[in-house]
Length: 77
Image 1 (cartoon, rainbow, N blue to C red):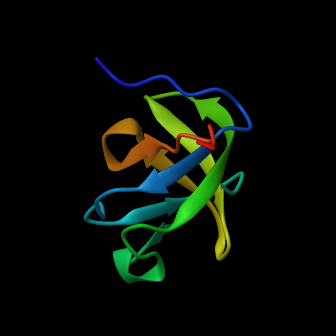
Image 2: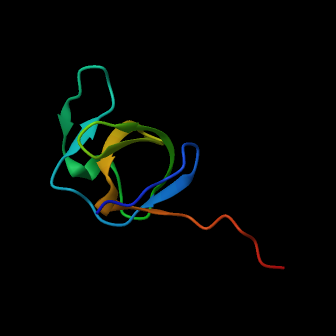
């Protein structure tokens, strides 16, 4: 069972996949060293095959939910 995320939610990369797929209309495979573990992004959309479109600072990529986690945006005061 894959995790569900809300569109516009912030997520964090918890582990690197063996390759990274771009979120272009014709996705391309990129080496995983484009991103770093701990990098944060925003959920753009849900894609077929269990992928999520995530906007990182270096571009938009398709990520499986096992590689990302939601960031708790609640602040404690």
